[in-house]
Image 1 (spheres, one colour):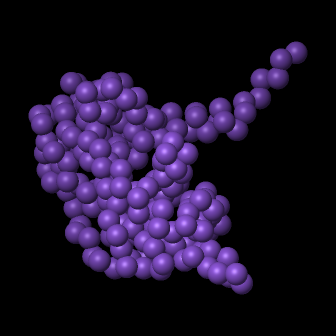
Image 2 (spheres, helix red, strand yellow):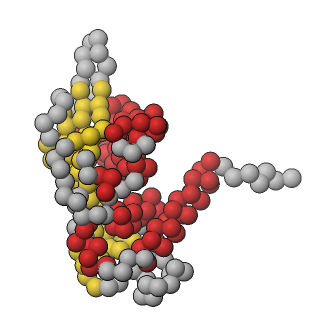
Image 3 (cartoon, helix red, strand yellow):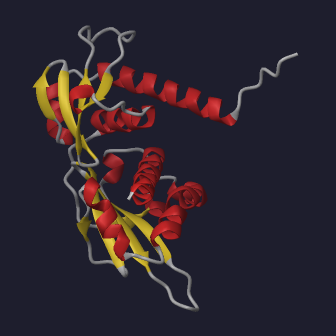
Length: 223
């Protein structure tokens, strides 16, 4: 008899598919797409297309022609549709677009533990995002700056090395590293503007942070 139990990978993919479907449904509930673009920094093309910058690259959100139909899903494509956009990235882009409240950045940085529910989820966040950051860049913090150039990283003034990446127009994310020494291991953190919960959920922030770190790791591997 075949084992019909799904693997953790299959379950996770099913979760992403459901999240994508729900995100598309939320998009259809926005009555004024042009106004929503003003809240999130996207560029309005027409009622069925907007362009949003994500990790220093433009992406097109193609809205269903029949905006009232929940069965006609939106799509997210890269410039000229040459590169397939992962389901995870599509979800982040759609969530940011639909949730955005238009609040300006504050310049006040907060840690993940300070987000709503962040204290409970922090061990998983640390394992998935902070630990890989430290593992791959902690002994060579200067590498962080050159590696983040493709994502539009700008030098920041924290720790031994730090960069700020504008993941979205209103979502700056700051990666910080401390080199350590013979007695102290390298350390790091990921910081967010205090307004970030007006643009992404705490879970989305974890997924976005993990996505950024592994994009950087892949940059090292391909260099």
